[in-house]
Image (cartoon, rainbow, N blue to C red):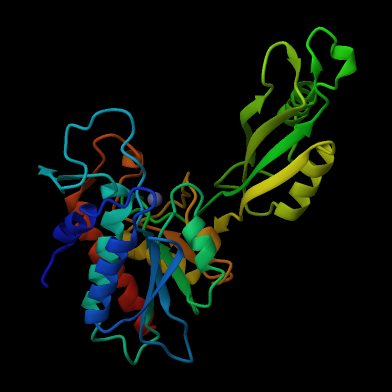
Length: 365
Ligand SMILES: [Zn+2]
């Protein structure tokens, strides 16, 4: 098969991997990788939600370079598309489609870079490709993958999320939880007989609004943030509500200890039941790290920047502990999750060369 980066992106786009149907796309990628000599393992944390781990090469002296991307895409949204989201339509330099920028272009470029080196990896530190399911909506696929033995080792990691080929040295972490407040129901005409759960939640929200992280601003990422994003409770205006629930989204920066922070929230919301449903550490590599400097050279970049979004790296780093990590891919971050999402075809081709240069660098040095 002699596909170039754009036509491979188009092939990947045609798999409609909207939140839960990654299997066919994963099989397609796995099959190619096997043909190129990779040892391929698949993992499904749930029916049809398939991740792929493919490796080639390996040495005792140096761990492989990991290239990772997700196979799922977000739904089309409420607005009508003017292009077919799943056929790979082009117009000028633009390749349209759901997932073109976020991030099948990145996956395609990684696959082609892997193909270019397939004959040169066997006596080298090698590479490992990690193609995940279920990144959108909480990095669930990578969380499950990190609990398996499939990831093996890696010495550095490239996350192919959309950055317009600009290397980003990390991103914030996040903690998401629900806090449920219990009360006692009563007739609305006799509130003194009940205990109002909404009042408890409201007081808690007020306390949260003036929460002080007591954290120093990170030089690039700034300060941690918090947002109370949901509030629900009550079943009728003439009832004293016996339950109310809020949803809280905290974004952390390097240096913030999640355990210590959660302890503070638990004591601040002592009367609530806390359910932490997502806990992902920040991702950060010093711009002065040798490998990162090399990445910057290859990309002709200078200023250290970080991504605004989360990535699978937060989970993969639980296994690849402490390895330098760059977020670097051909997509346009501003196009992610948009109607009529597109990617620059020039950038897709460019990213193959960038990944190739970084693999070459890794296996030589
Ligand atoms: Zn993405």
